[in-house]
Image (cartoon, rainbow, N blue to C red; front, top):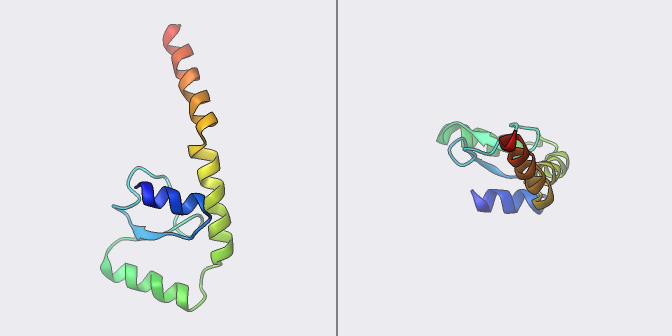
Amino acid sequence: RIKILESMALGKTVLSTEKGFESIDVENGINALMAKDANDFIEQLRAVLDGHYQLDTISRNARQFIETNFDNSKIAERVLQLIKQLKL
């Protein structure tokens, strides 16, 4: 999964399977491209080649997704909030 996160952080459009995106809460066609099976993977590639997706927008959204969900400072904030909740 690290390769997917790294690619998205670099602002790349990622096409992977549902298994590949497991535990990464992406939105198909918004911040990544997800295929259900081999045939769907081929269909997604055809859609990319035919220009059905705005890849620049998906790439920007991918980068924003990583900044919002995987930024170290934001993760640290969430951990601190959990610790505070446990102390109550």
